[in-house]
Length: 525
Image 1: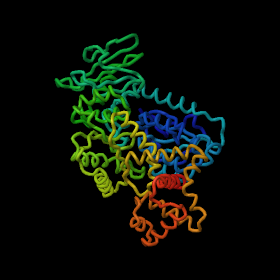
Image 2: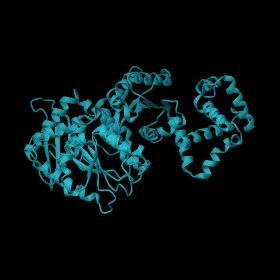
Image 3: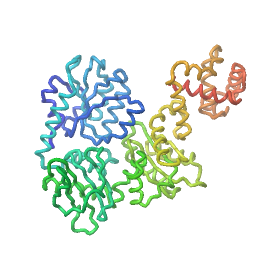
């Protein structure tokens, strides 16, 4: 496979296009073309994105149609795509939808060697399909004549982040290259891994009969299969099944597939259970009970005992260190205190499932200790702790809650680096109130109205929000955070109480006041 970004610039479909940034990536090899349709995804679109596997070497087409003026979001998309090994981006309709290519995008793309190609500006007669058809035709033609599958796949995976360099990733890369299904199993036909083509195909190893070794078998009209031991000389060798619809996979190609999977197993798995621990994490988070039970039995893990989930995340600028160290810190911290811990990277997060002991140490203090350890390594991370989860459906809901509303929680409580599921739920409820419209928003903010008429309104509101949201009602901590004397804080709280006509701590007024303060931060920050 030898089609590079530089090669496609010579195609008619890219006539007039200019390389705006990332020229250091022009020699990167292409495997596919994809389209980024929603760059600032809503909850449903984010759900779709989270179920798509990105394995690099693609070039992305977009017009940033729903964030044409949001440079920060545009940069965030480039960082995300570069982090999973994508090689570049083709920008359409600049000067029409997107006013211009901001210098911040150019600088970031140059820093990441992420090729930024800009189609001719102010042109309405450009079509995504022309680039997709022409580039994919060249890639498929090149792949069909290439006999270097092993080196191609290993080169492709070497450009991915370390946590994606797994046997599972190799199976998926081969699947996409050959458009066939692969199943990896032990000699007792226990499934260890699978990559189906197409991804929606329901394929069970039990449905495949016993096959001869290294001989193609016709399973059905136009569906053929190969059974290939990875190491025939070993009695306990893993076996690879290749299922192809339409044309028969040539023997030479099958031998190359066996070679690349065997190399992957030897490089990244000292034991077959290590191959698919990430799949168990995926099965739990996607609430796939059948797959989860099968993998749990294989690893002898009692999934039913795990009622807690810890999730670590970091900002994009610290991604490299996070990908290298965060998971080991998370595992080490929890393994010393819990009987069962299953942890891996998932969708950019470090995720752990655990059976938190009833008489265990304070989870808050342990979480704070973990964050400090990471900070000492130069990793600025945030931890979310979700306990008392009844089943995997609860786990999935908690993960999605964290993914969708952690940013809101950080706006409400900017001093925190450790969050609970209750805080995430509260942030989600406040965001829902904001999204319900002006009437709902004004009603929620009404408890703060008595402060608006005061000449000290700004100082009083700042003090109140710090007292309620950051200092947990402590005068001393409020004074410390605002760099003021305690008497000044006491005076301001007295003024606030007088204006509100009730004590700040009086329920139920305090609950409404707290929500008003939280929503104020949500809409102002």
